[in-house]
Image 1 (tube, rainbow, N blue to C red):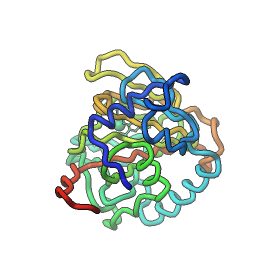
Image 2: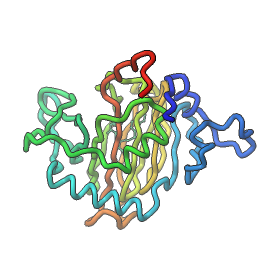
Image 3: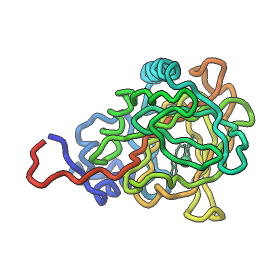
Image 4: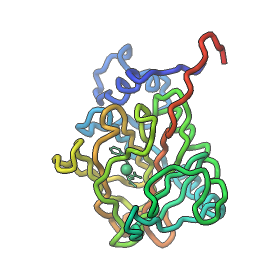
Amino acid sequence: MMRHLGHSDSITVSNWRVCPRLSPARRPAHLKRGRLKTAPMETGFDGVALYPARLGPAEQKALMALLREGARVAPPYRPRMPRTGQLWSTMQTNFGPLGWVSDERGYRYEARHPITREPWPPIPEILLDLWAELAAYPAPPEACLVNLYRGEKAKMGLHQDRDEAATEAPVLSVSLGDTCLFRVGGFARSDKTKSFRLASGDVLILGGLSRMRFHGVDRIVPGSSQLVEGGGRLNLTLRRVTKPVAPLAGRSR
Ligand code: MD3
Ligand code: FE
């Protein structure tokens, strides 16, 4: 049976701190099932859980193959900044019913690729399974943004993710390829920040209030992985965009 978790549950789950002496009774449900390969690492931020190497080499390669396939329908492109039209240092594409786009008109979610006008390809099942296992959210993700970092200049400035109506849903991030130096701050741009490395196969969940923290990617570490042909880093972020429609009372499935 699918357990429907509420918002407060998801905060409890993502607040869970690594503690070997935690009694089995207090362990969150998804850990009791014993399906996790690694325990989340303490990040010092409530609601931010890092699962180092959550995806093994075989899963990473399988995901890369699916991404290459998806890129035939939805080729990565260099987005433009709102107003100025300045090109980003990263390339992007999306999977799922909705995709995040940026151009002179602003940031928004759209159902189609801005150049080909084709619908985005479906989110790979591996990623939907990861979300079901780790997100503690009662509805599936609608968007999977793919960020491609290549070269010394590829970075993402400090920003907040605020284009989603479902702010109570966590963001799930999967890193593939080269390691990056990633930064998480507070709720104002000038708040102090803490840096982490995200390596290939790492999964990061941002939930609770931390969903609204400033964050960014300072740079990648060239040559740190052989996964991406020609080098570089891929980051996939799964997001719920719209608030799910409340389940009807008494409905059994
Ligand atoms: C921390 N991407 O696409 S993912 C983005 O590595 C984005 O490409 C980065 O930021 C990347 O918007 C970081 C991890 C992430 C996502 C959302 C967060 C970290 C976050 C929200 C709050 C705090
Ligand atoms: Fe972001």
